[in-house]
Length: 374
Image (cartoon, rainbow, N blue to C red):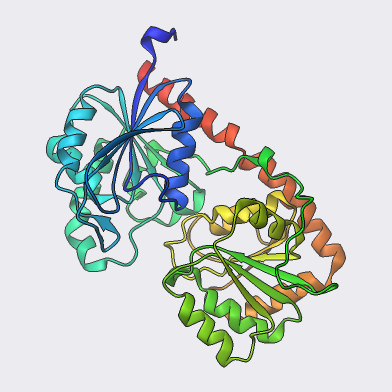
């Protein structure tokens, strides 16, 4: 395809950098990774504030003004009109779900005759009453989509909303830039004594992460727990740590620079993702730990979490909300050096084979070309 006929793509998502969650990071990865192959633009919302148009790392990003975020959704009166305008000038509109404002806006005002791609990250979990009203619109939008990209086969199998559309679903796992996860020679003081075993958690301190169960599990684990991340539950979790008398075993590091984060991945013995709700759609942090050859303990959610790190291959998977099971799994890895080494080797192999950035971008670019050819 010559340069004068490059595919024009508009990615649509709730938010965009510098507001970063797992979905936002993926949108940015796709935008920046494919901007030299397609004409790429992004439409998102402000967390709060007026409309802006800016160029971020070579990608034009429009952020619709919003009154704020309520029930995990930006309240934006200008977004539907911006989508209507911007959708007229592109070949493919790539939506990231769940984002009800996005599909409402397209069904109401979006330009027809465009190829529609949906990356379906997860089901809506918490807003059950709103989901009753939203469900018909969701099915309507999925019915007109040309391709639905799911991040793991687990989501495809477990989501009742995807069942009628399995014939147009394609599994495209999320990714990390593996080449960036190199050895950190610098050392940092993270409150660890020589010879101490280290358990690591990385993520937002939010309701679905299940960190309280990991803290409880530390009662039966002879190691130090490092918690990287911040969020609305930090005070509650710190109080829980204090009430259990675990102050000397649990260190809250908050948000940290990339070098310190990667140092912690490098020095930990086990990485734990104790998530308890399907809002945890994938768990990119698992891949980051695996890139450093770390065994993973995760939970058996009907999402991509146990797909990323496989039970008995790269770590151990336990039931959610089970502190004792978490403790037993962590202890098994800490106490069995041969098992830990096997998990480590398998983790590095799996992340390189399944979750490289190059692989994800090639799959998406191929889908774009396939849609335009058809």
